[in-house]
Length: 439
Image (cartoon, rainbow, N blue to C red; front, side, top):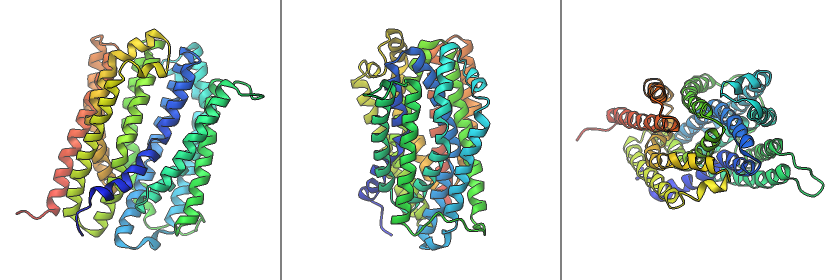
């Protein structure tokens, strides 16, 4: 097979970028609108959104496992062999979402107290979460279908669905938060309902695309697919990996919360911009995910190595461009989210770190996507465990002890991403070398 060119990569990455940023865009819209209500509301929603997205990140890793399997069968030209696997994976994620609701609903207030939320901030966080949490099974089921689409080397369907969801969320949020005509203003709860409505519509659209565009259906078969065990094993490794990742974000949010409402509000804005950038850059990682699984199925390792290098360079370039854009609008960006001068001051004090991190993040995200496509869940798991528990937490505790304040929060995230990218780069060279003949 000839080298995979930029056109092929962009065909997958372009739509994947738009599809990937759907969830962070929803959170950014919520953050921007709620920031107009007040600092306590913004801080409360920031904490609740952080916890919600943490759970989504953990359980949505089944999407990467499904994508790896489907893309490998695509490379083998045996897609018909996994007809029964798709509905079983879909059901698994939907049930997981219901279980999360059952577990977290009764203890949501104690959970948010662990984030140092108190008073009005705690009340707003809990009110928002009690509605937004119903999106767990809906979003997780949608992500499974997005994984199937990606494995089929198609990211445009997920893009189209995400555009619909984003537009609906924008309109519903505005109406339900601030009120419109006979519809009263629901404030924080309105933002949660707006997001939920968008997520329901996205799931319905994904099922429609699955039925109309693919050979797969969501009819359950009694006999479990033999690859369900492989899917489950990969998913467990991805869960462990993402739990360690989520612990780092939890600790950063907890550290920020301990510094006061203005700091957690500033952190909410910064982390949402960080996540938006991450999902934006991750579009090329998603392309790498689909392509690496396919090339592995074809046993085409020379092309795989060249594709990985192309994805890496493009991702670093995009990260650098994002950093440049943020630099040009450095003082303007926080004003879109809040008018509180103290929040803006705190945000601007660490925003330079968010900017510098963009090309560094790109390295980690590019290799993440490649290894997910290859099904190397254990390698990704071990990398995150090392970076989180041997790098992030020690640095966070030491810098916090030294009284670095808000700088401790983002300095810890900074060094964490350097560790992740470096370990993955070394890991890929070790992984690919046995498959490439020496000159």
